[in-house]
Length: 162
Image (cartoon, rainbow, N blue to C red; front, side, top):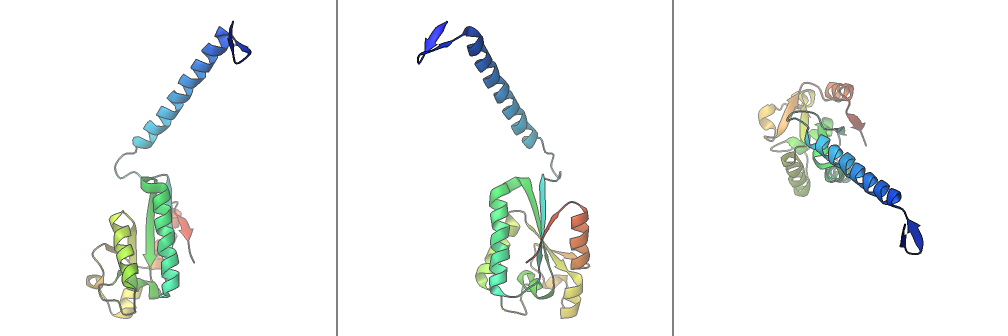
């Protein structure tokens, strides 16, 4: 037996330590490989849908901050959809009918570049007399925002509302 810091270490214990280290590395490597094996178009492990339906600047700041925080935490392992309707639709308009802070407009456009989807309620567009042409290029038209929220939840999206 070999002594180490005053305690005997047997060959059996050294072999077990090496074996556990190799097994741990193999498990870690397999877990990382599984993360990397997601096929294009395949859903990530996390999906979240935000309801965005108010014109209040404080509300908008909080929701946009939360979306950014989730994106920073999960990166490519999360799919985020924002369903805008009622007074919240103005964040997706080329020429909003309500005041939208320029900072909010920039943050929304930035989030879209990072893969966050923004869905615009067709019922709200109709009520405002708008068409899809009134929306920013990254906004996706949906017939009804409430139905979109329900369908996304049925697909496993976690639902966030303020």
